[in-house]
Every structure is written in structure tokens, then in C-alpha cells.
Length: 256
Image (cartoon, rainbow, N blue to C red):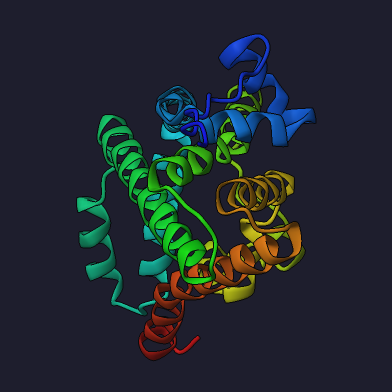
């Protein structure tokens, strides 16, 4: 007569949450195993990421307002309107309220982050099941939020840079390699948009997603990497649709 199976205990990380949190840097497997087992731990990394986003938005708000006015003036100058009409329109242009920028930018960023985590977790959860692996949505969601911790570091670094220099980050990531100095043109350049998100924090984030996905699904690194990268490429492709539409509209109305 065989003994009934004993319930599996959650793997313990010596030092608890904060030990696992620090392990994201040098031992990501340990950290993400903790995240997969302790599915309610996701709210702390999520809170840190959200707070860093709000801090970055608040610090960059004055520069964002200034850049918005400059961009609107640049767009008006390309419409070839009569001088009297240009002066009339310029009289109505005011610098955007910084509080509104914080509320819309920060609030929009928080909503985008939350939806992104849910969508990513859902896609990877069902991908694992469809490919013959194992998955729990709560575990997948937890490791995905933990995998976003590199963005916490990025937000803090950018906030410190903007606050100490008083200069906006015009060309983030590697976008400076193809930047023309024309914000309107660059923002509708597919290559510029792609390179703007490419930095060490993104590569770190993707590596963590691969590790976390492999832990939850039981897949090896190769299969996990291919699955994650395919879906990331699909997501980036869909994200470029508004850029392409913007480029088409600018070419149509401004001849550029």
C-alpha cells in the first residue's frame, strides 16, 4: 500500500523576499524561483516600478512641457500658413500645465504597465500550455512583474540624470545613432523608435523573462528563449503600427 503523496512545500530562499530581490542582479534563477513560488510577492516589485515611473514623470514634467510647445511651434512652421494666421494661432498656444502632464503621463504609464503585465502573462501562460509545458497564471504573472525590475533601475537613473543636469533625454537607448535632430521626423522613424527602446535594461529584462518563463513552464533555456523572443517581436511589430500611420500622415500633409 503506497503512502499518499505529500504536499510540496514552497522553495525557501534564505533571507526571504529581500534576499530574492537582491538576487535579481547576480542570481536571477534564485529570485525568479522565489517569485514563481510566492505568487503574492509581485505587488512589491510592481509598487517599486510604479513609484519610480511617477518620480521620473514628476522630474521631467517641466522639460516635457517645454518640448511640447517647441514641437507644436515646429509643426505650425511647416504648414506654410499666412503670417497673420500664424500669429493668431501662436497667441492661443500655451505651455501645457505640468500637473496635467504628471497626471496624464504618469496615469497613462501606470495603466499601460498594468495592462502590459496582464497581456504578457496571459500570452506566455497559454503558450506554455499549448507547447506541452506546465503553467500557472499566478506564477507566470508574478515572474513577469519581477522581470520588470530593470525598468525600476532605468527610471531612477533617468530621473537622477534629468534632475541633476536639467536636460531632457531626447534620444533614449541607441536612437542617437539615427537621430536627425528633428523631433517630429525622428518620432515617426521606425528605426529610431526601435532603437530608442534598446538598452542594457531591455536586454536584462528579456533575459529575466526567459528565465522566469522557463521556471514556470519547465522548458529549457533554448525553447524558452525562442518562445519569448517570438512574442516580443510580434508585440514590437504591433507597437510600430501607430508610428507607420504617423509617418504616412506627415508625408501626406507636410510632404516629408
